[in-house]
Image (cartoon, rainbow, N blue to C red; front, top):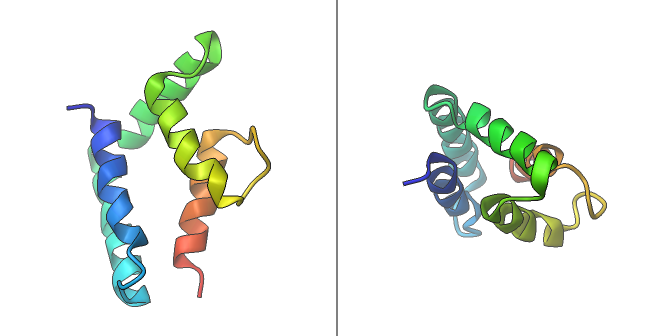
Length: 93
């Protein structure tokens, strides 16, 4: 299975409103480390670069559909920046 897609699926569990903030932060830290080890960030960058060359891939379009409605950045903001802002929002006190 696509590593980036699996990573996004794992990330969805962090948004559970019933999850205590401390647990959400711990899970986010664990996922961040796992993504680093599994080279998810580099694979996502490669997909983003490929999308810039010939339009968004299906996966990137799906990611954008999840992030843009959150209203954390203006429409059309680069996906890495939207993901960064979403992570900050999750971890803010």
